[in-house]
Image (cartoon, rainbow, N blue to C red; front, side, top):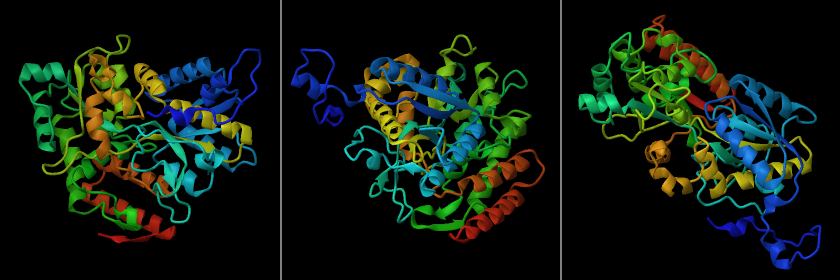
Length: 444
C-alpha cells in the first residue's frame, strides 16, 4: 500500500509550539478535525465488527460517528426517505447490492471524486465487479466513470461444512453440485441433524439471494447480458429450471423439512446448534462459528467456495455493501464522510476489521500472517471465491425484480407451484418490469 495518498498536501496551523514542517507534512489527513457524521446501516451478522472498527476510528482521530442501526428493509426505507428530503438525515449510506444502482442512477450519491478530487483508491481494495464506479452518461459501472463509493462488506455466500464429520466419514470437500448432494446425503440424520439447511423464506432479497449460486453456478442467469444492455430474460430456460429443481430436490433428499420457512437467522442457528452438516450463507456469519457463547460447533466448521457444475467456475452472488456519501447533506459532513472512507480502506483499519470478525475489503489482509491463523480459516477460501463473484443487478429498478423472485421462489419451494411454472411466471413479470422501464428485453 502506498501511504503517499494519505498525506497532507498543504501546511496547517497546529495549536502549541514546536510543531515542525515535517510533522505537518506527514500527519494523516484523517487526523484533521472533521464534522460529526451519521451512518445509516443494517443490523446483520457483520455489524458488530463494523461497529468496533468505527470505535477504533473515533479513538484514532477524535472524529465522531453516530450509527443508525436498522433491520435490512428498514435501512433501505430510511435511505430512500433521507435522500429524497430537502436535507438528508444521513451522511454515509451503507448500500446493499440490491439497491446501490438505484442510488447512483437517481443522483442521490455524491461522487467521492467530486467531494475530494485528490482522493486515491488504495490499489488493494476490491472493486467488486467495478460496482464502486458509475458513469451517469452510459449508466454503466465502469472505472471510466466516477468513484461513487468504497466497499464496506464484500459479502458473498460460502459453503460452510462440518469438517469433523467429514473426517469421520472420509469425505472430500465438494466442488460440484453432485459432490455436495452426495456428502449432504451421507451426513443426513434427521431430525437430530440435516445434511443441508437452505433458505426458502420470502422476504427482502432473502431466498433469491441464496438461490443465485445454484443458478449462476450452472451457467444460468436472470438476464442475457446486462453489461451490454441486453435484458432478455433467461431465468426460465432449461438451465434455470434445472437449478430450481436441484435446489428443491436437495431440500427434500437431505434438507430441512421446513425449508420454505427458513430465513437467514434460522439457517445460521441450525449450523450453530449442530443441526446442519452444510449451509450456504454469507461469509459474514463466519465469526459466529467459533463464538463459544453462541456456537456448539467451535472449531468444527470449514469453508469452501460454492459448488458449481464441472467445467464452470464457482459463482457466488455479490450481496456486498458499499459506503456512499449522500448528496443532500452539508459539504462539511460530506468531507467528513470521505475522511472516514479514506481511513477505512487502509491496511491497518482492515486488519482491525478482520480481527473484529469483519470481512476485509482489501486484498492486503488476505496475504498477511493473520490469514494463516486457525480462527481465520475462511480467508483463503474466500480469496478464491471473490474473483468469481457475480454482480446480479446493474439497474436501479432491481428491487422490483427481487420482490418477484422472492415470492415466486418461495412458492416453488413450499410446493405451491411446480418449478417450471414458477419460473415462467416470474420471467413474465420480470420482462414486464424491465420493459416498463425502457430496457431492451424479451424471453429466451
